[in-house]
Amino acid sequence: MALLVNPSNPIIAETDTTKARSAASSFGIELHVLNASNEHEFDALFPRVIQLRAAGLVIGSDPLFTGRYEMLGALAAHHAVPAILGNRLFVAAGGLVGYGGGFDPYRLAGVYTGRILKGEKPGELPVQQGTRFELFLNLKAAKALGIEVPASLLARADEVIE
Image (cartoon, rainbow, N blue to C red):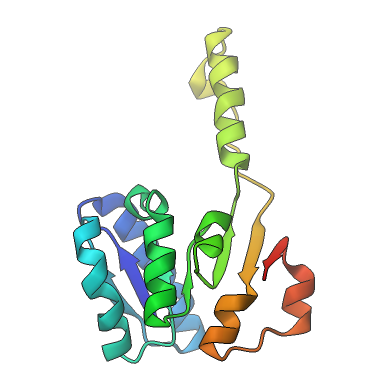
């Protein structure tokens, strides 16, 4: 597998890399970490994934990538690279899978902002994390890649894009 991170944002890159290495290790999967610091580096990225013979590309959580989901989805489709990014819009743009927390973290941030503006002390607020994760699948991309999506996965998907 390949993982895309942005070395210009070392905190997110290190977090994504550490988590991905741990997951890959537990499944006995070799992980190739690829870097892109700007969108001009995206075009060379997908041929590199193919050259490495990676089974797919996990796109990190950096805002550079999540903000350019359409470009990345189109490139994944064009180069026939199975790719995953944590949102529906990426899947609609041609990516294979989207899995992530949806908009719940943003809603929680808004609630906390309101509580702070009303006088609560940030240090006294409990730590929370999202509880709702969404799975999106693009069947058109799967078909183009020659991937048969199991019925059990289709049943678990929040949305299947055909």
